[in-house]
Amino acid sequence: MTGRPGFGMRPAENGSPAPDPAAGEPLAPLPPDARVDLARERSDAQADEVLDALDADLVGLAPVKTRIREIAALLLVDRVRARFGIDSGRPNLHMCFTGSPGTGKTTVAVRLAELLHRLGYVRKGHLVSVTRDDLVGQYVGHTAPKTKEVLKRAMGGVLFIDEAYYLYRAENERDYGQEAIEILLQVMENQRDDLVVVLAGYKDRMDSFFASNPGMSSRIAHHIDFPDYEPDELEAIGRLMMRDEGYTLAPETEPVFRAYLDRRRARPRFANARSVRNAIERARLRHASRLVAESGEVDRAALTTLLPDDFLASRVFS
Image (tube, rainbow, N blue to C red; front, side):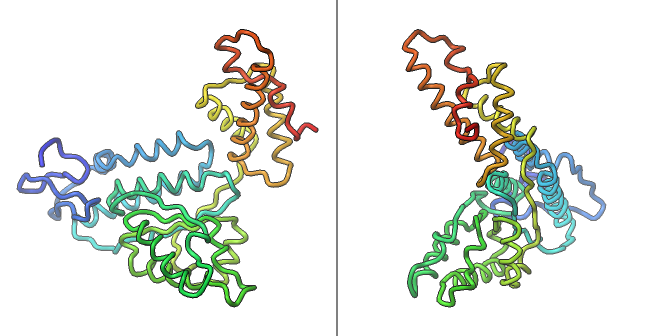
């Protein structure tokens, strides 16, 4: 292998590059008196690229981003410690993400998988996202093959189980979810060097799930809560979404958009960023219908500017 030493290619004492830990091979050992530049280690692992992308992907969520950075720092330091022969064991990386819909849990899981791969803790760095229906069968003998197939696809990466509390249904003694849980527990314990499991859902329901499944609770090392977005954050999210789609708000639309967000937050089934995206999609529909109905010539500004009526027609203003 040739080229400038980078991630997984730190020169060994004999001058040859060390193997890549992401490929399952350890980096070259270091003598007791060696010194390691952690900034360079972090740079070579390209971990900051993933963390910066997380900042760019998501508005707010400072506590969540801080926790992910702390986990990245731990893994980086552990990797260097291992090269000195200091074995503290592979850390437990199974996690629980709690919070309302639309708070960025899946996005963080995607970046987490990439980060773990860059730091050499998973082989592939992919994310497999599933729900109960992907794991639990409808009849005797159906659950085990379904669960094992999902686990096979997820090996070497991160398995993200959304609304994980639906795996356990205490009211139904014949429910097959418990079989899926037992298989998951076994794999989470025995193959945690090749798979990270992230459970996600509402906090109160996940608390009840863990109370009913202490074996699962004991295998989760990191509990990360995703708070609901504040109004200013929702507005910033909306502006980013519109920018990405090539739209902007007319000056007179800005207070209307803020009023829309305030009203929508107070209505049932508000889903944070997901609801903001849905609102913008509907505004785009009204915008397009308005332009076509006018049957005149349009310029770039008309094609890219959302007016008050594009939001005021929403039922939240009824």
